[in-house]
Amino acid sequence: MTRRLSLAPWTYGFIVALAMWAATTAYSGFGSAGATLSGALAFGAFSVLVGTGQMFVVASGPGNIDLSVPSVLTLAAYLSMTVMQGSDGMLLPGLAAALAVGTVAGAANFLAIVALRLPPIIATLAWSFVFQSLAYNLGGQATLKPPAGLSRFTAMSLGGVQLMPVAVMVLTLVAMVALKRTVWGRQLLATGQSEPAARLAGIGVGRVRLAAYMLCGTTAALAGFLLAGFSGGAALNMGDAYLMESIAVVVLGGTSVAGGQANAVGIWGAALFFNLMATMLNTFGIQAGVRFLLTGALIILIVALVPRPRVR
Amino acid sequence: MSDAAARVPARFSSQARPALLNVLQVGLPAIALLVMLAIIFSIRPAAMSYFGVHLLFKLSVPLVFAALAQMMVIMLGDIDLSNGAFVGLITCVTALYLSDAPAFAVLCYLVLVAAYAGFGLLIHSRQLPSIIVTLGMSFIWLGMAVILLPAPGGSAPAWLAAFMSWQPPLMPLSIWLALLAALAGHLVISRSSYGAVLRGAGGNPRAVERAGWSVIGIRVAVYAAAGVLACLAGLTLTGLTTSGDANVAPAYTLLGVGAVILGGGSFTGGVVSPVGTVIGALTLSLAGSLLSFLQVPPTWQIGAQGVILFLVLAGRVLLSERTR
Image (cartoon, rainbow over all chains, first blue to last red; front, top):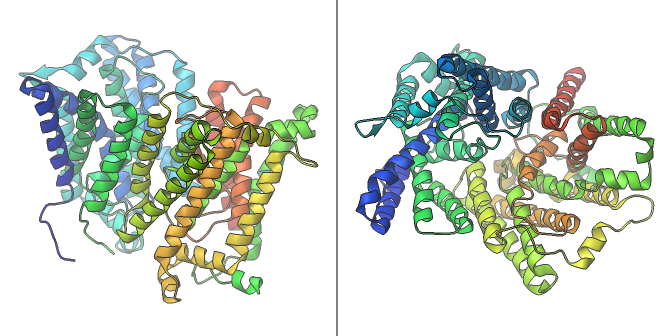
């Protein structure tokens, strides 16, 4: 296939995001440009966090996907808030609790897929019901308040640079290097491209996938922990938006749904695109229905127009 | 003749699936369904009546149709994440227009079904992953529904509400409709020669293409059929709730997928069972009632539904190991 455009697929998200930032700035004045961007970066950081985990799972082979992301996020937020009880001294145990929830959830997902030979969609869906139930029982309808220290951390900025998005950017770099340079990363992509071939090459396919699912659970849990601090507490519906978003940012970011090919940096482009579009349409005063419509149309448009490398 | 056609292998694997396994895969959710009914009847014998069954299965009708719509798409090896949002949109169109401007409402349905088919065409012609295109579609349907009806409202036409509360002889309406849908699906998808081609298009598109069929035509037709079935789901749901709501049915998307897989379907394409799907949908909608009959606290009910899903599917794994 001839390359019509020399742009890599993952750059499209950044380009569209940039266009939206420019449009918002043009509409509401130059002074708001910084605030718009920092808001998008802060919210984008959460999308990127869950997206990065989802990317590992999606890259590990066709059909692999984790639908339990929102419920793991919510459960981790509830459990860590319960552990901390709003006290700053308990921040580390709280974080540990959240991460434990994530790894256990990821392992449970993978176990169900392997032991019951279920399609990942079904296994992670069934687990997500269970996790959701656990979160209900931990928190009921109440919003659990975060410790002040956690809220301060999620909103902290040093010299005008927000700390949390930068931390997530570092994580993106780590994920990128892990995919390109580490043995596990290469094994993950090999497994995703062809499981039989990877097996014949002596790769422990199950172990590699298990790690992918555990990482996905962990990032979702971390996102839940931070989001509870950022948005003022754990709420039952806090994860809902991230079910579709975690899938959309991964695919728009240039990761192949067929597996075996991943792009960590592209997730940022897609996440910024999503958040800046929401900001833009809000500033334009466009009603919710039109916003959904445009979001859907743009997702399809980007996927349909972006040239993809054919791996068949 | 139809027997010979049905034997056209849907999945071109070296070993054919034993007939016994096929029966068991459909049979398992049926057994689960009967076990659940037995538990409910033993707790509340009064439920073992025409009216009791009517109440138990009333809400399953739209889910049955939504699951069949999902089944059509899964048959091609795709997945439809927009199914629930589309059903919501149909309830909005129905509640707003069907009683006052029926012609316009029907026109809307036709345009929406054509749009569904159009997305099928797009997925096929650009070789796009269905999961992300249908995700985009779900936002489009939701957006249109919210534009039409920002808050739940409107009203179902009287005849539709009357039909959904109609009590036909012998069995409640929900059971009749489930039987009819399962029978029609079985005849078209599992028994007819055209059904074999449809399943083949999911299992091995290249072979079907070489046999002279247009796979692109098949995909468009199947997506259109999925749209029609989702319309039926929306219509029956409006008849039950008597109003339109953009956010009434997002759960149908994944419940539908669950019903298809419970019924013996597979994501690899080409392997689906309409009868199994209908039974799977009935099982999933009855699971909720069962849990309230067992007095499972509301906070644990969702989790228990996940466990039921695991149990039934685990049974399937055990069975397939036994028969292999």
